[in-house]
Image 1 (cartoon, rainbow, N blue to C red):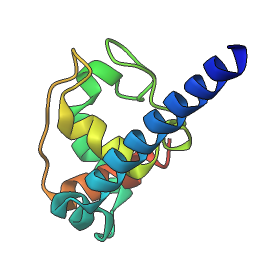
Image 2: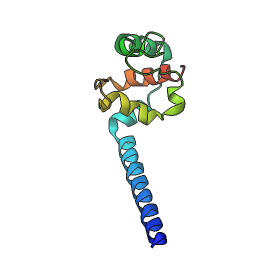
Image 3: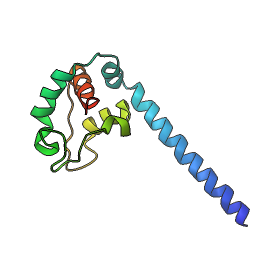
Length: 114
């Protein structure tokens, strides 16, 4: 009985892992995502985009206000996860944004400097 429960739990963990991996793969294959990931970013321009769109909640120094501290965020999240975070609006109170691919690439480049 205990062995069956262990196998069931292992199967569940594997299924969730496969679903999560599949969702990430689909997001990474998205044309917008591919465009962002294939565009060279400019950190200085990304900082300006950050100041105009993100600093109200994350602070001018990205150290957190209403939104969390973003220092080291690129160490904690992949580029795909960061793009999804910005465009999804799935974590209120963060609004949904849809920057151009170039603006998003610039923003990613800036975030990697934090």
